[in-house]
Every structure is written in structure tokens, then in C-alpha cells.
Image (tube, rainbow, N blue to C red; front, side, top):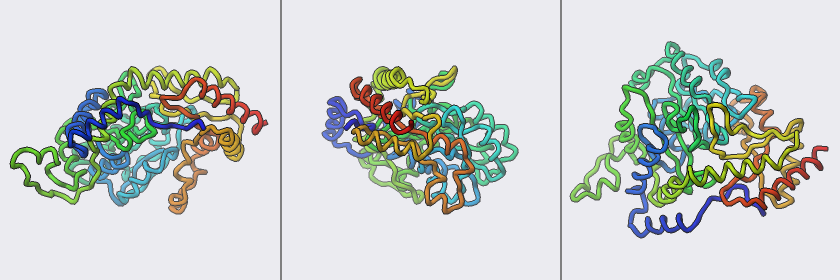
Length: 401
């Protein structure tokens, strides 16, 4: 069986995790703090907080901004449910909009149509590793500042809609020669097991707030908020006689462990010169073999964008959702793992029961109905790629005659 996206676990990672275990620091400690600093240096943002998931990072930032019942958050209909779920958790309303026809990313035109006085946050999603149109999205937030109604001191300080990027797919991608994490107010990365850079489970909040915000002060506050509201973490309490602490709010528990950070440190060290090089080579190999005119390849590079090649989401011209599902079954029967990214959130039972209807997002549904993601992972061999392509083309010819 050719798997879809297993993590890269080699001796270098195993040795670093073993070193973390032997150090005695298995929860948040020196490796996590080092990982945060190295992410900040890599991305070029102002401060970084590592957490146990991207989902936690998105929700924490919504709560930091004071998003609540009666507020609206704009997001693409084409995303994973986590992007929408965190809005629901805060009591706010997800406002889905459609995506671009040429790629899978949120449409700037549709965002602008959805902005009103209840809009507090725009949440673009960098689908498959390609950055969204951040210059235009950032401009929308600024241009609509007179529409914005601040409800707390943080919102007054920003004075406009917050742009909170769901950058779960796009660590290491570039936009106008800047890396994701430094493209807008706040970006949230995922380091889940299937991501380009993994920590097994994990994520990071890349703070890049404009003046007059002090991003380091925001970071310190978030450290407290994500550890029960406790004003000292375990590392701080190791100082001699520094045991006493206080609970300053009813916080959450979302910290990253040093075991996870140990994996991330190794992954980050070899990310640009090894991981991204290999992923690009694999995608290029696929494109050279899959020359059927019915296959639409994803956009990986434009004049101002460079993807991090997180996924290989193909779209097949002229097929139905039923045919796409038959293709997947045919391929699976040949022991090749493929996937679909994603079932649009408005198609999920919970959201349908809230009144959302995917018919209102025609580009989203069109993309989804004919999308198949092929295996893309570091250890994928040329022979495996050739097998995947052979099986895929046979499925296309047999099922979609």
C-alpha cells in the first residue's frame, strides 16, 4: 500500500526526542522556547507562541480579540472544519464566502461583499500551501475601518478588522519575498503529523501586530492565557525559591511540550534546504507524468507567490462528484492512498443544521466535486510516484470514459 502522507521520522529526530526525554524536560521547557525564537527568526514576524495545535491558536486569538456573540468572522467555505468551529466556540457567526476559480483560496471580491459593522475578523486560509492575496486582504481591513465597531480596548487599539490567517498549510511559503507568518496581523501554523513540518501534534501563533501593539507583551499575556491563567510556567518556577504563582484568569491548557519541540527543531533546521526541495521535486515529477489534458494541476508559483507544496490537489475537468468518488474507489482498490481536500464546511451536518447551504458557494462546490489529492510526502520514491500516476491514469480512462 502506498500511504498518503506519513511523517518523516528518522534517526536525527529520534535522537533529539531521546535527548529531550533524558534531559528531564518533557513538558514546556527550553526546547519549546528555543523553537519559538527560531520560528520568529525564520518567518520574520515579531513574536511566536507555540501551542498544542493550530486550532487552539486560532481560538485563543479570537478570544484575545474579544470575539463574542453577535460578532461575525469571514472565512472561506472551502476549508477544514476547525477554521469554522473555533468561531462557533466563541459564540460568533461564521460568514462563509466563496473561493477563486483559478486556485482554492478565498476570494477578495467575496470578502468585501460580506463586510459589515458586525465583522470583527477576516480569516483567510492558505490552501495547500499557497498564500492568499494578503496585500488586498490587508487593504480591505484598513479601507473598511470606518465600518468597524470596536467593543473593547484591544479592538479600539487596532481600530479595524483583525486579519487572522489560517496558515496551517503554508509554513515556509513566500508572498512578495516575505514568508508566511509575517504577511498580516496574526498567522497560525499547524505542525500536525501530516504537515510539511511536524511536531506530531502542535501549532504556533505568529504575532505580527502593528504599532502601537507590543508583540512581546501580547506574547507574555498569551503564555498566561494558554496555561490556565497561571502567571508562571514550569520553567520560571525552577528558579531557586520561585515556587509561588498566581492564577490571574480562568485560562486554557494548550501549551506545547519539549518532546514536540524537539521534533520541530530538527524539522526546521533542514526545512528550506531539504524538505521543501524534495517536496517541489516530487510535485514536478507528478506534473511531468500526468499529462492528460483533463487534469488541472494546482498553482504552486506566480509572479509574487511561492507555495510550500503541502498538498497535490488535482481537479479533473468535466467529471461529477459521483465519478470522482468512483475514481477514488478504483485507486484505493489498487493499494494507492488518495484523499479529498476538503469536504466544504457548509456541507457538514452541523453547519447544514444551522442553515448553511453549499449551493451558495458554487466555485467551492465545483472545486470539491472534482478534486483528488495524491500522495505527497518526503520519503515518496520515484517508483511510488510512477505507480501512483499509472494507477491514476488507468482509473481516469476506465471510470471517466
